[in-house]
Amino acid sequence: MKRGKKYQDAAKLVDRSSLYDAGEAMALLKKTSTAKFDETVEVHIRTGCDGRHADQQVRGAVVLPNGTGKKVRVLVFAKNEKVDIAKEAGADYVGGAELVPKIQNEGWLDFDVVVATPDMMGVVGRLGRILGPKGMMPNPKAGTVTPDVAKAIKDIKAGKIEYRLDKANIIHVPFGKASFTEEQLAGNFQALMDAIIKAKPSTVKGTYLKSVVVSTTMGPGIKVNPLSLS
Image 1: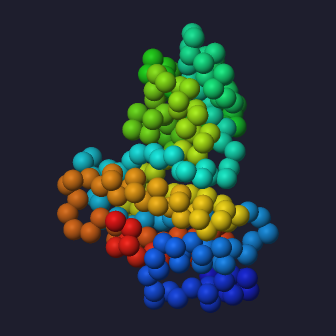
Image 2: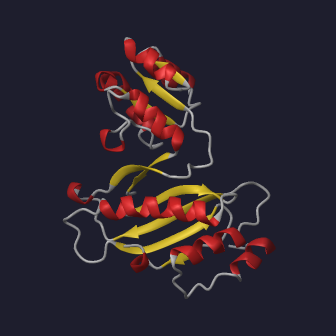
């Protein structure tokens, strides 16, 4: 794959044979961000899990101390008094069964996160084929199926993100923007890694974090030493 000159120049700053500690990696992220837009900063973690086994799934959520740098639109499925509570808490959209055909038939997806009260999951379940593949299906482990919609909305707006194992046993998570300071990126990265390390399934044998690579949207990968994170 042919890369542009900016990428090639940025890649020269990174020693591909080195494992950097987290602080060095955050500094390099700033130096290798060359795009004209505010790039998202991501981490890609190859794990020793076998996601084919239910007891080796890794899934959860964490509130990043410095936020995500992105405005998050929240859709809440609720009824009765929870509707007003959700609106007061800052939900962008609130509704019930009437939203199902809008999403199913009209392709309406102007939201980033879906929250539901437990009594609405029968309704939300009809949207599984649409929301599931997009990673937006409400889930109790991620705190998006909850009777406390106000707290869920507040956490999401403050910078709560989900992490989960994909089919290749890799976790891909954004944790900030290139415009963040090194300190902000480091704080978010550490909070995220602490949560993922804590979520290690007890059934995983051998190495849990096989490789940890951070990068900006358009930048080169920077390898972080997994041993420096625990």
